[in-house]
Image (cartoon, rainbow, N blue to C red; front, side, top):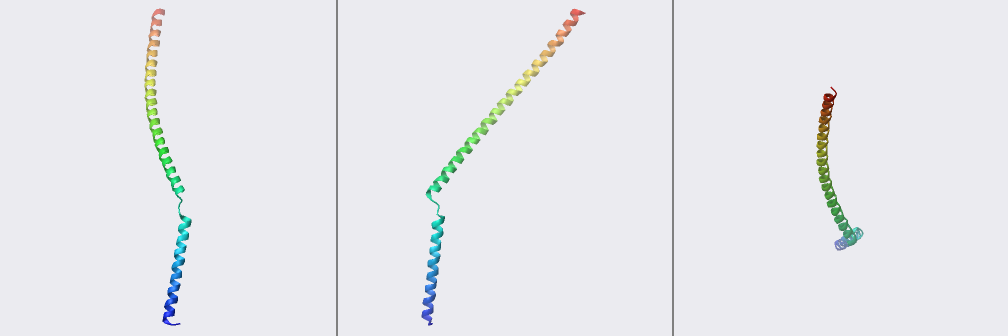
Length: 104
């Protein structure tokens, strides 16, 4: 084998290797390519997730406000109950005192 034949054989082998590599790369990209419909679906799902998170945040805010209102209302009701119970105690004590004066 002469020097020219050796160089030509190496060039052919390298060209075939290059073609095989290019073809393998093309196959990989062909099978792993993402379709536009998949990208659109992912964007739609992302938008829906964002909207769901906003709705959740609004619901949490509303529930916190409602809880604060109910806690305030409960505190006021308990204060009114305490005042009513104190007034009832005073009225019973007065009634007992008056009953004791009338009987005694």
